[in-house]
Length: 101
Image 1 (cartoon, rainbow, N blue to C red):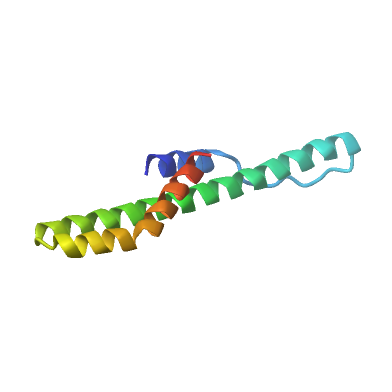
Image 2: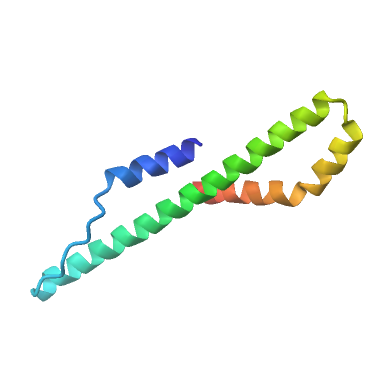
């Protein structure tokens, strides 16, 4: 959640308009490079926000379901469900690591 906030704030503070490429070759290289950086930055921030959203959703839902099952005294059902959801937790953790990188 904090990573998503940071990514969204960086994204919103960055100018996103691509500059037209001028005729001057030296200046054109600089403008093309800056345009490429803006596109790469936008893609990285979009991926970071998407991964953070996935991580937040997975762990929030798992937390809610876990507390509900344990609160209702369904320990054996909870254990089966917890084992069945192991791949989702692993992907959620990998997704969290992706937001950091």
